[in-house]
Length: 296
Image 1 (cartoon, one colour):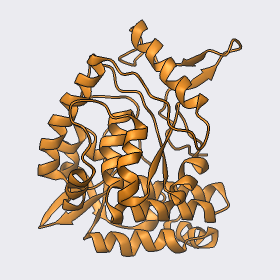
Image 2 (image 1 turned 90 degrees about the horizontal axis):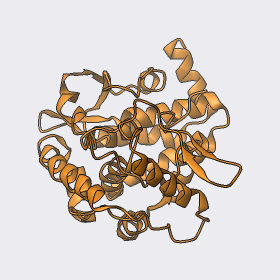
Image 3 (image 1 turned 60 degrees about the horizontal axis):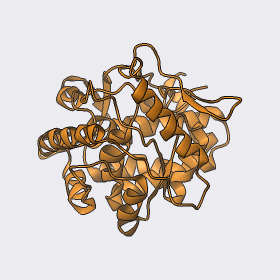
Image 4 (image 1 turned 60 degrees about the vertical axis):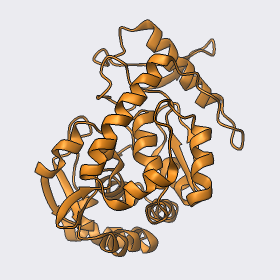
């Protein structure tokens, strides 16, 4: 079955209790012993976290803070050029620090008064149903590590830049936050793995890689685009198709490269009416009918 966040580096707990993040040999930080130790320590923080407790503090280095500052500054320029107004307004509303990596506890403290969302720390892969179901309760699983400093504008896996610059800013919008919650309620409602996969793919092509027509231009609202220094410059040249639930729920995608197929909402109202209504009302039978129409 499809697994959300299958691109995360596996996290293993050894017999002696130590936590090891298994980076691929192609990972930018693979040969950096200091970075690997920090990845292990940060993953251990998440594994030790108990529900209801404050999120453990990750002690970031000055070098890591500089990566955040650099990427934040450069992405802000691109956001003003390519992002939808709702996202830009949410960025201002949330007011994330620009010169340092915020702690997830701090991000939740900023978010909660705005939309009720808080963060949960994740060491790596979160099971698909668990990841989506907690959205209904206003909770979002997030990693705490940051990409390797040698390639500040690239990460082979979702890091704190993606999870916070992309998702937290989006979650500061009441309209976007309502869609996240609706996706979570849909995940709680459906029973089969096939239906859950369909719900997750619709999320992928909207809240992760969604685009929208605004003022006659195609603009991005998906967190995956808005947190990617390279992809945000390329998305307008992709195969952009009209919003279509059956197509989104069955289209294959490759997480290792830029998304080649995107789905465009005609407006925010269109996104809410189509995707929000689907998540609010879908069940296994609804999705089975959509799958039948798609020929899958």
